[in-house]
Length: 100
Image (cartoon, rainbow, N blue to C red; front, side, top):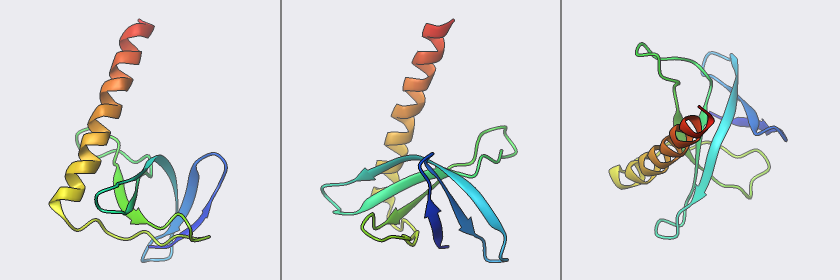
């Protein structure tokens, strides 16, 4: 999938294989010192069967004007992303509890 344009509000549009434009929101970007790769987690704000927001992750080159999103292919890389998502989820849960 090709990233068309990242806007100031941390959104970008991708074009699916069938030509449909999908607006996505960037959740976080991360550069890993060990792998020397940049990762992006994002969502199209759709909900899965269990009521959870669908989240995707890809490798990208932040130096490119219109970065191409590449698949994450190793279990080690997925563990990095899952760890960050878990810590972000915990932070959000903590903030929700403080707001009550």
